[in-house]
Length: 187
Figure 1 (cartoon, rainbow, N blue to C red):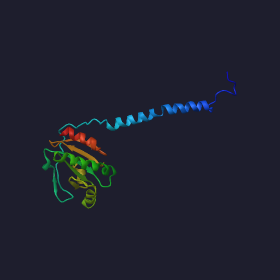
Figure 2: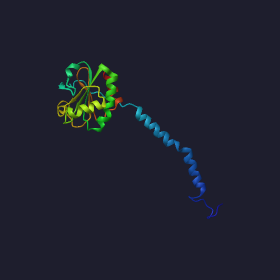
Figure 3: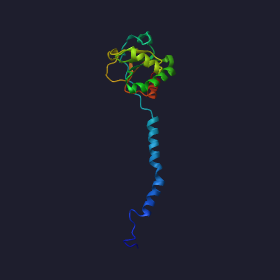
Figure 4: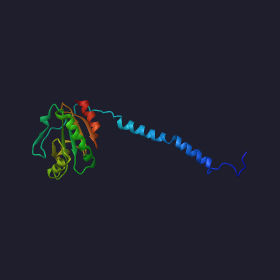
């Protein structure tokens, strides 16, 4: 039996030794759980809920920043991605490279078009689009984007099916992987 002066105290080496041993033995469990959760949420794709058919997309014809005319009617029967964005919008800047990659991957099967809401028009949008390597038509639409696709937030992405109906709407940053899954569901 230990006397009161010999009793084990919280500061005794044996207590700290036990704590140290426990930490050395079990430190990896929280790390493994954290990595597992990250992988599950990173690679487990969200469910894609397509909107029911029947919500006809607006038709329009506008001059692009390159001086051509983009007509939605010219792309009838083709899946179309309409992105309402702005040069000053950080999430827009982050998602644009993914759209460029997807336009390359999908080629003529999917037509992307950008509606830039910048009030300064093509004077600001064209140099930005060239700098970013945007490979699909850009319309410096200003307020026209809001007339065709009402809403205040940017970015906004609309996916239009081959029948001309809006089947998917996304407000905010659109991950490339999510958009690719939507396109696969519609093609």
